[in-house]
Length: 85
Image 1 (tube, rainbow, N blue to C red):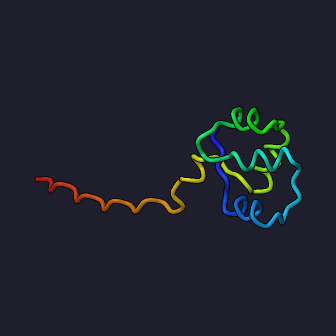
Image 2: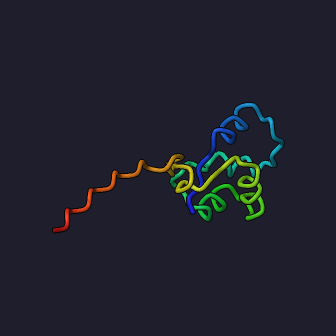
């Protein structure tokens, strides 16, 4: 899983509206959508509980989910059936 900051996560880094520990904040900073969770934890010195909390607070999301389309693709029109003789 590759985590990326959400808009809420970016805002929390700017205004510190949510009280995060130093490890949680460090983990949030390095979540750039290119590093795996393991790499983030190693880089920031964060524990699994720290990363879990960031997900629960909606400050980060899995990059695969964050980049998924929010609306379904339009349906293709059905082809008319060939006339039977």
